[in-house]
Image (cartoon, rainbow, N blue to C red; front, side, top):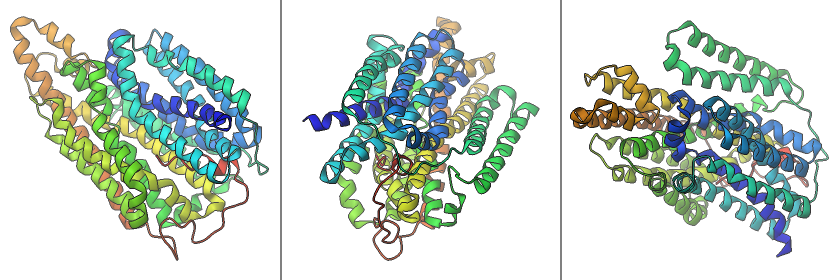
Length: 520
């Protein structure tokens, strides 16, 4: 059993960093009450972590090749633990958001090196087993996040969703230093600093404009200026990648329709399938009065169906159905699941969400296992690391932008319903509901107006959620149609043949294996 201890060390970090993507979801209402946050603050608490992960993932893979994968993994664990402690001790939304960003730095260092470490530690059948265990842990982390967050928040405090990372990090660091050997790549690509800076600026400015647009006004000079800055940064990123000697992302890969289709699908999948979780959680706890544990359990239909489809049926389906149909069809099912949840109304209970969540779960289980392997097959193993890193970067970026976009339409749906209800100070009521303060709105109205205000609250949340579900359904539909239109089988073989028969290189560099097995 000793040979599997290095895998345990790697999986501990993987589980921890992926849990933190979703663990905050059910803690948002408690955070809002304790820190007196705004709706934009809540969005940033979720968004900034995924945004930093997306921005740094490819660059971290190259850094691991040069400085050593174990060294960067341990450094990531230390940074992640320190940031988690600071998040748990935060006394203001600004401090919490800042250290969530630092968590993203540590998470990127870990995620970019875990697969490289596994590929160095194991070979042959053991390598397949190790990747299987690592993949199962990754999938379990996504499912466990809301439940763990609910348990810790309800029975301890929301701060414990961050404090729990400290003992895990200590164990992971100790095991890594004892059982995991150092590895570096013989091929050490240079750093693409211009690409990193411009990509981060473009993604960050776009997200900032989407989140703050409600506050500044969508036609304001400030909002338009931030969007313009994002566009300029995106153009600068394209120029940097076209002219750079060692670009993070070779834009020539987009000449391949299959790669372009997979990237569009990866970008839109997270937004369509997961970005509305936070707004559902606000409804379940703030308006429906659920506790964090019960609210977390409400998301199990998607997690269970996703695990069942990918784990039990995934291999069987992939052997018989082309990646084009698996990914495109999965996205269309996600769209259908989002649309089904639009049945929510003012008098609905949480059960109205179950069919849609289950359908979306099947779609997630179909689409995600084929994303990375299809991208790698399209470009060949010589560019495998870049392709796999790009797909997983697109997924994290899609999550960040999806939360921001759905936040815009959710808030608009709330505002439309509240303004039509005739309540006094509709803008203040809308902002309070968006920040998870429904009970405060009801209490402020007094006992004589409570029944009427309850209807206003439930109708407003239903309106906001329907808007968010519609936007998610459109994302899934666009992604599914794009994949079906662009993705093709690699020439001369099954969808799973890699790059039309190209040989796997004798040695993988860290950048080449970064997240290549992250298909869960």
